[in-house]
Length: 260
Image (tube, rainbow, N blue to C red; front, side, top):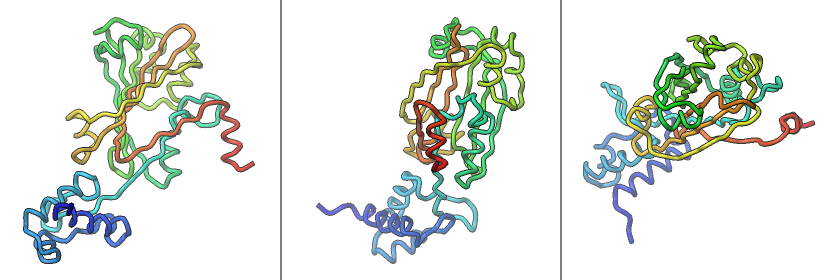
């Protein structure tokens, strides 16, 4: 069975992108040029480029010099275990920034703190009453200026009263995991919950996701010996991230990474 014409056109353009004939920032042929090259109608050419937009390979740029442009494909490898290390191997406050830079990208984040009512799902994980209040440390993380992930970390208000630095609108130099440990609230155990889903409208907007792009929701609950102390909710753009876990002694992994 022959594939529809728009898929054949999209396949040829996709091939040019993957083999490097068309590079990030290059313009695709116009609809008129695609009509002439492939002998198809304007609607077929439009459907072909729409398919590539849905795949995240191209984007429409406005303006006289705009048009259909090949997107820069960024894939960050995020080591989900490193930010929890408090033994000095990976400084928590630098874990994400250092990882991004090590992979040749430039990191940035837009950060703020809010006091919010706790939704039922988070309240259950924190063992607090639903609609009680918590401090939420919120950030949008960017790679090369492009939104890559959203993170909200919830801390119960009674814990914030004991550790007021959690309410600071600035980054905490040693990171919140170490800060909590220093104040008598270590987190020797965490529970992770990962779900692949389609984004909410707000997530799609904040992450500037191409149509049809899923997200990975990563919920991590940190437990002290006494109680749960925080829930981190990270929403990763599905077209820009992969997660890696390491379980066990971090010194062993460090040894083999160093090649010794």
